[in-house]
Image 1 (tube, one colour):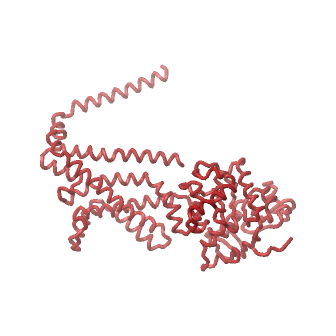
Image 2 (tube, rainbow over the protein chains, first blue to last red):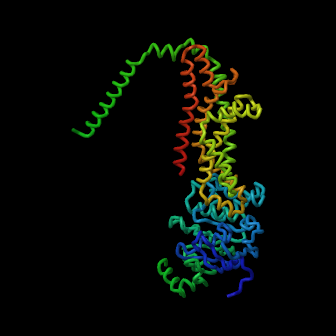
Length: 247
Length: 261
């Protein structure tokens, strides 16, 4: 296995408490540039919290998080600037319901990237085309299916030209028949070389598109490695137990 | 007996009771007295057209000014109440609790008489200006709670999505949270508007110039002048003409928001 040149995301000794409850108990974790890392584990294992710490939607209690060499936990860091380079996709889509698809895709481009209306619209069209929803540009989120909403959410994140993407259980809220379209878009992104961190229950996606698979339980990383290896031949009892239930 | 027949008989009995009650009221009512005291055409004719062009117009104008001013104060108070900085929250809470806990009439008298006398303050617009300021101050306190609730009703994922795109907290508030919050609070704010229409009647305690009178002051003066209560009924009808469409609108808006969820 080749040694990655740079780590896009590098987490060291990360601890996170919610009140007295320690959710992350010293996490060391990295995502190499251009790689797709999938994080699996039972609910309550801390995998979503870890993902949300990377762009500081949750503030870490202690530890460091480096994104492209910048320490995001440093109070001097411009968090908004870092976030604008990290696309995030949520389980519940979180499209802005008061704006149509075009408005969803152009709002942050204009406010944060300071792009002109025409430029923002052109980029929005390009990314909608990428997720196969060019014809929905004038629709409002409420009129789209869950799968379409999630693809619009991906296009919204891509319109900021992010260096990496975080996916927080992107298909968990979808009806089974709608999962495929979203995974197809994500698979394509992975093949194009986007750096991706994906919290998911989709083992098939992890096996095909993932460069690394991380299994978390009880706030620690139990096991990590090549996805095919981990899925076929898990080393730890807890990983074996979990996989025997989900596979 | 068939169930449908029984239902029909029950209905029939209920209608019969209603008719008897109505007949009783109609026969007991002193129609000549009602006609003379509340429907005196000669008195009603003297009110026209000022009751609409001055009194009703002033009621609406005062309501709109007080509502607009109250809305601005309410928005600031709501944002203060949700501020991470504790003293802002304390100030907003004290203001809201203070003015919601007082009768509006006390605040109107305070701004109309007490404050001007105590500080030698000449309110802009005279006594009526002071009264409207009092209404702004009071309605701001009520609407602040409504707007705060509306802001908090916007799902947390909305601001998280905006922040994750790199938007600052103020841009997030302005372009993502507030537009959605305002949609949520339109029905309750319309309700506040209706309450405010009725509260402008409290301005009658101020004693204002003829051209500044709103509906209640106007009709009360006309009652005194004519020694007849017909102007009161005329004012009541005009209030209903203004408020009823608005309360119907609120009901419709509420149905629409419920459907949208």
